[in-house]
Length: 178
Image 1 (cartoon, rainbow, N blue to C red):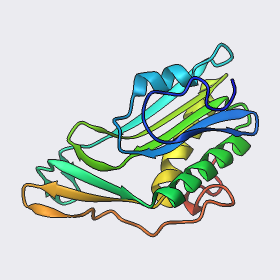
Image 2 (cartoon, helix red, strand yellow; image 1 turned 90 degrees about the vertical axis):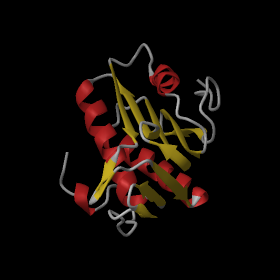
Image 3 (cartoon, helix red, strand yellow; image 1 turned 45 degrees about the horizontal axis):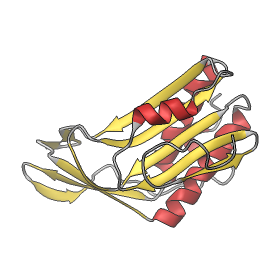
């Protein structure tokens, strides 16, 4: 399928060719359409489609009664980092056919989807492993910040960490893992 053809219906991002794979990456303010993303990633040569959908929950580290999260991103850098993650996954698991990595920005309520990773491949091992790699590497390398609103106030998330470099594959936490 040519780049841009059959695009998922959630906003933002782009379909980009990476090796012989197609990847949908993006930072968007639009709701994430998981069903459409899975349909886009699926194909007759894929026996496995793994989906990770991260949602806003009602608690955070030391904070009960969370009502919303507000995500901010440095979009240009974040999308480049998402492309690097897809490239690293594609290089590591060469059977991957399609990858979706999209993160929402803006104010999200409890239950809203914040991040979506979909990986399609002929076999489940590669799909599971590469999807886990994609979400873990996103959390460690992509400049996205969250501001939490909870029953006791509003402030930036407590689990922030320095943004790592993924230009040579996975961040240090993934070194030596399959």
